[in-house]
Length: 161
Image (cartoon, rainbow, N blue to C red):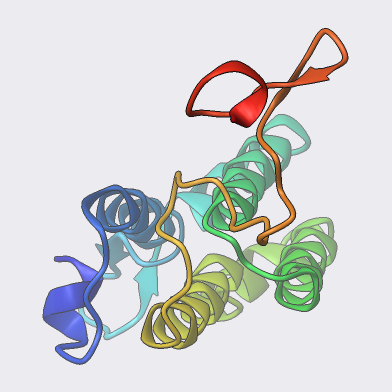
């Protein structure tokens, strides 16, 4: 399910939509993939991997870090990145506590929180007409093109004339 179907007011470019869908699936896998039978409690790979001391915790947090890294590629600003990394840090601190940390992982869902932050960013960004994922940023009217061996290369002929 893409963000466009979840938020009819928001339309993403195909590359943004594909990246968002991939991250949404990862967050769901890490935090809410399975329902505990007989309850409404959902757990994910994050809580399950944390049962394996050290390696499991690092693997789970590594996948969470990938989500944050990919969000940066989608243009998330530094302030939002700091909040996302803070969520991941809190999750790591909770996971570091044996036994109690396993229960904490079920209730503190850092990856879902980070997806909420990404969703809010994409909603603001696309409504304001920001650049599409993968496009180079606008550099302003003084940008003269790429520099090759110390010379500015301009489209349109020799020396841009």
